Length: 427
Image (cartoon, rainbow, N blue to C red; front, side):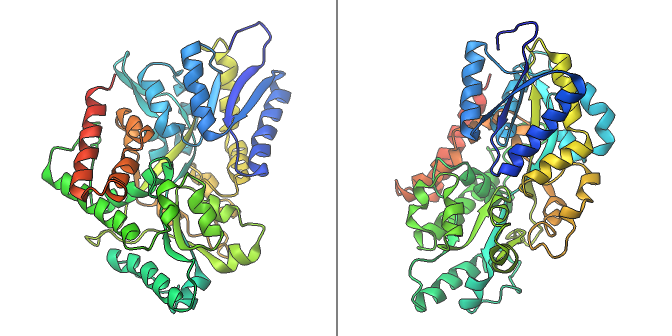
């Protein structure tokens, strides 16, 4: 942004899903303004517009001072840190280091290519992973015991097929067993399908950031994951519209009682039902993923939400002051809890708060177990993978099978070649 001696601090923020979420950040910023006497110009964008506007501002030289979004940890911040476009925020993190879980710190310790070194270029706010939701009453009506869901991989997915079959026999012709996105425009397709890749032990990027796609074992895992995932659609257990879904659509179908289960990369689905005690407390359940096909526990891919400061700001002192204020545990708690539990804390002290420890809550109380066995996103180790996500390569591969009628082997080779090309041309 053009600087003037007394301009407000420019903050771009992803618009909250709920009024409480937006109001929570407004209140924190209001308190900082009162404490410091400084002013903030807070601009809200939809998540997709935030990325688009930031890319535009990078080209035009009109960047804000501070940015926060729900997907920028995978599609934007790793690239900005790589290109030396973010301020080093070690001075903010060091005093709070013992407050954070290790995975949160690892997730913001990025490689700066011009400087040939890693450092902290963002500050952790919260974390998310992909959850499974289902309607208890649909399973009961389908003569499936919702309290005895199998943990074995193939048996777990068979449950939802059986539920659809049994419901159809009862005349429920509009209900599908599985609400899984199959499109190349929904970021949820990436998030959910990557859990299938994890289930088949596919390691695309190692901890040193090296691409690992030359072994036959990895290719076989990709083929198996693609076949497993797309078979659901081809066998008629996923709504036909799923090949064109955008991000909200699996939520909409599930909440419209058109699918028995769905998966989602935040807890926005139960969060949207908190004011409906029947849906939230009685009908809906949130559960962890089943064990992998090899019977080992599933590792949950964890995404750490981050706030960053642009390096070219002339207001670095004020920007660091605001971010430091926000991530004090008492302030951070208010913001995270304002999001209705969509995101989970990255500070153990905040995990102990009542919201996350109410055994009567069918969703938040059981959430912690999903973060006990985490796997960090590949963008943490190599920012080139952010381009894989931006291009939705996995959504494209899925559509190669469902629309272009290619085999899983052909679709896997398509994805492998695209990913290799992205990594080879990464600058």
